[in-house]
Image 1 (cartoon, helix red, strand yellow):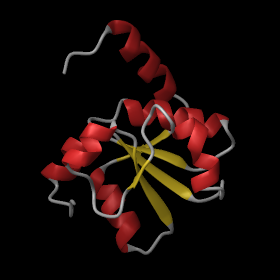
Image 2 (cartoon, one colour):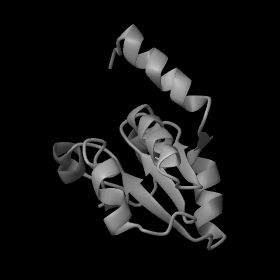
Image 3 (cartoon, rainbow, N blue to C red):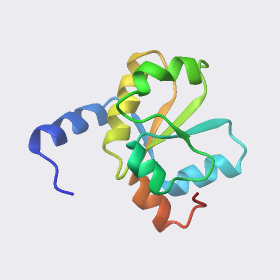
Length: 121
């Protein structure tokens, strides 16, 4: 997908304030039993077509509105993914501004999850 310059600038700015992790780092985190919530920030149609096993769906369009009701613990690690790591970076930045202490964007998103052979539903 080709993204507009304005969108890429917005994402680039958000990435200066958030943490990102690779799929390999995510596998290490989850295999070590580190408490976390995996959040799919893609649209409903993307979610319906397939998702990472065990993920919670909070699309970029509603995550800020619904996160506190679904995940009130602001200290838990939130690993967010989208299609390629752009929307999840924006969502992680918004959650950071809302007081969540450990939102992390999964670099490469859904494409990286599939390429790594992680379990999907």
